Amino acid sequence: MNLKDKIFLLVMVGLTAGGCFIWYTYTEITERMNQMEDEQFTHVDQVNNEFRKDLKTLDLQFIGRGKHVRKAQKDIIANNEMILFVSDSLGSLIDDVAYNLNELSRDVEKHFVSVEQNIRDIEEGFDSQRRRVSRRFSDLEQSISTLQTSLKEIESLDIIQTAKAKANEKEKD
Image (cartoon, rainbow, N blue to C red; front, side, top):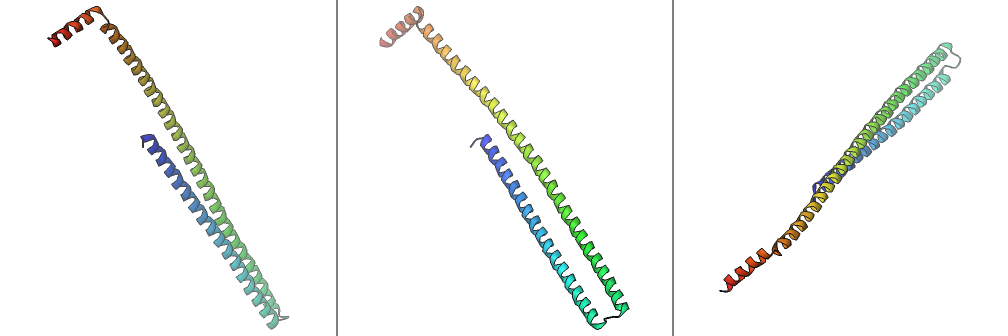
């Protein structure tokens, strides 16, 4: 496994880990939002049930009594204000979560662009190095063939042939 494969494998593992992290945080935030929505519905139903029970009790016990009617009206106003307050706070929490998700999405996109640019730079560097090595290899092959041709020409000279013949005669003697 060469360096390029190792780097590529490392980058791919990093991308996969980053994708898993993003998926995990997204599902956690989605689950939290669903939980908050369920809690809101439960709370609103609880408040409405309590209000209905109190109103029914007041209606049955104090029909026609003005002070109890005014108290019930104040309770209704207080309940409406509490519902508005709770829904506003939940709305702001939901907006905060949406903002955080958008920010996370932008950060992840920046990192992916950066990683993709790094991969392109590495590929360009690798291609350049491959061309240089290929060119050097071609130059070496050409030099070897030139040396072989020159050696054959030198060996075919009369002086060399005569020296070889004398050397062979000395070996035979």
